[in-house]
Length: 115
Ligand code: FES
Image 1 (cartoon, protein in one colour):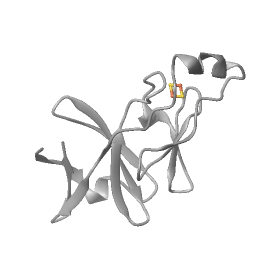
Image 2: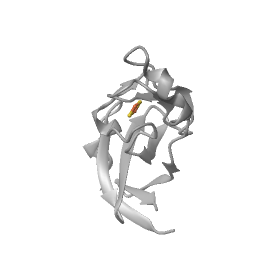
Image 3: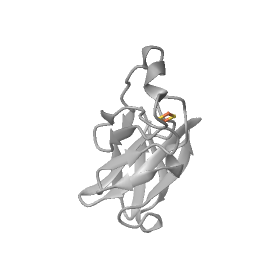
């Protein structure tokens, strides 16, 4: 594990997100009310870029492909793929899987991610 500086706090306004690449890993940084959080950027369903998804209620990220929803702070699945109707028939090969999360710390206005 090593700390990597990824961007300035000011680069991510409240409710926004930013995709970064650290050590070959694609990571998505979020600015929520109580601070900054990071998850993997690829959806665990079929690898859609969550950076193109929607932050809901400052706590969930919705995948742009099949609308799986994940808790940003824990990475837990809240709703699995459910769009378009019928996508659930593939759930036996794509079962629910949480997002990997990363610790984000602030240092003099910069955001550091532990990878
Ligand atoms: S790729 Fe994200 S829900 Fe299917």
